[in-house]
Image 1 (tube, rainbow over the protein chains, first blue to last red):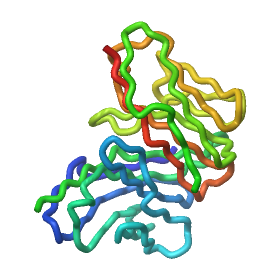
Image 2: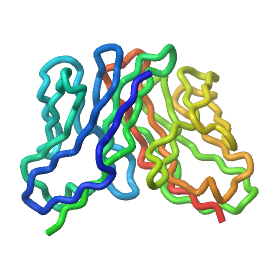
Image 3: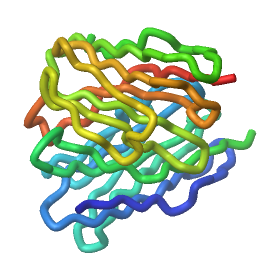
Image 4: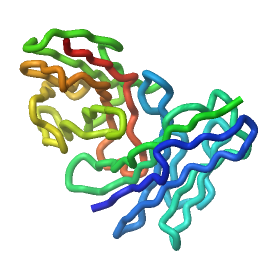
Length: 115
Length: 114
């Protein structure tokens, strides 16, 4: 079974500072990895995904993530935080089970951006 | 643009009522999912379906049932709503075999049971 760990349920940064949200996974096979963002009272939107092409993946809103197999990590970064980035972020890994092609989600990280 | 539509954004129901949460997708996806989301608990899978009339229990199926009579529609049913079912409910879909694709989520239904 696959699992995802997001270190830090809450992260606070100042506007303009670097954003780093951590995600580590466990998988016995090469994984597909995803980052989602959820704004208050909304569903989840796909930010970016890793599907075994380039290890550095660029997503929407200036976010990017790097797949590091040796560290089993897929951390999400953004060089300069904006107030509008305040949201909850979920990392997920694809699990090729017999039915449903399940995604396994991490517990989420709430990003707060201070003015 | 592909879409997953949940019929209600906000819903208030009384304890003991039968509650239907509807989800419709227009992408011809085989797989559909129902999650509930609570503070500090992340996303928890209630039920999923990988085909019409097929359903599988997720991690927390107790107190819920589902129906999938048509490919595009996946309904979550609370047979007798209770206050501990107050939560945000999220529907998602995914194409069969599309392991390199994520889920497409609906906007969520925030259910309050009083």
